[in-house]
Length: 115
Length: 114
Image 1 (cartoon, rainbow over the protein chains, first blue to last red):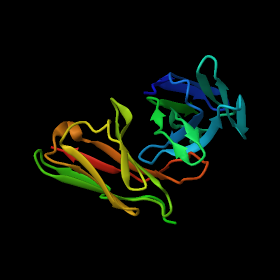
Image 2: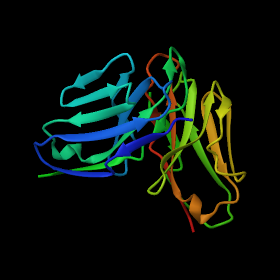
Image 3: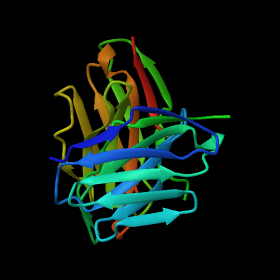
Image 4: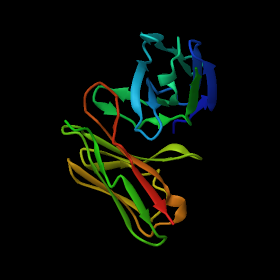
């Protein structure tokens, strides 16, 4: 089955700086890579995702990059703000049309943005 | 839609007792997932259903855990007998049949087994 590794487990940055979280996956059949944000005591929520036919995707201050050859994908947050403090999870799955395998999550990164 | 609805939000029970967690997925969603979250193991998939049929239950820890989905709008996760190591937050999530892979999570059920 799929195995997703995520680094670092904790990350502290100064407000306004950038944060980068990296993940690797094992199953070359995986083609869907979402990122979820979980605030303390809340549910995980999707913030951005990328398909394997795209190398990069951006949404305001958040971007995700994918290297299929190396089986790496990364989350980049620019101009970090205190409200970005949360646990971030990467995940991988195979998705085609309406069919999907289950999402396999990484172990999570606790991001703390220091004022 | 009110989103994925889970109950109870919090449950404190004693070792050996039966625990039943409940989930109502978003109407129209065909997939339902049960995840367990702990500090040590992160988010673990326990089981998922497609059109009410269990597809993969390989993540269910042992025979003490069972899950059912009798219809498209209701699922249960049962632990009998419960043990302290079952203490965790249990999330239910659903997704639709469309091209989006987004999972919509419920608020979770925090279980404490004393």
